[in-house]
Image (cartoon, helix red, strand yellow):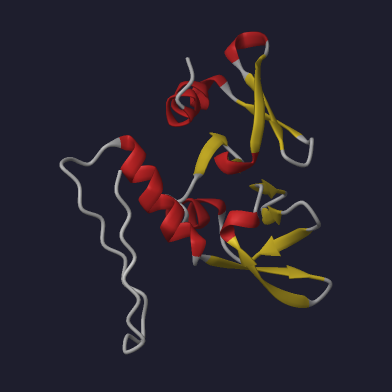
Amino acid sequence: MKITINIDEELADTHIAVSCGQLTPEIERLIATIRIFNMQLTGKREEEVFLLDAAEVLYVETVDKKTFLYTKEAEYESGLKLYELEEQLEHAEFVRINKSCLMNMRHVISLKADINRRIAATMSNQEQLMISRQYAEAVRERLGVK
């Protein structure tokens, strides 16, 4: 892989171009990482609205018809439904792990097989999330594990 950086003080916006022989999974992950780099989500905590970098969100969960964004430091309520966030984060490193949760794969430390073909995922904050058997194969595939 060859990386070229051109600095032009005349440019107002940053432009990123990827040239490749074919689109591989590695290049797709690189593009997803670049997209999420500038992606922000809004979350509410104690009547205050915060702008959160999507990359810092460990997981998104729906509880009692409310959607929450979890970071290492705090939890925030989102005004969006889980499926809306899933659409918004589809090109980022988020994957559906059960009917009420999206997980940021960049924050997964380990995976452990559980009963009934489920998987226990340990996150960077040491919290464990359960990946249902319905989504387990897709998660393994996205993480590149068997």
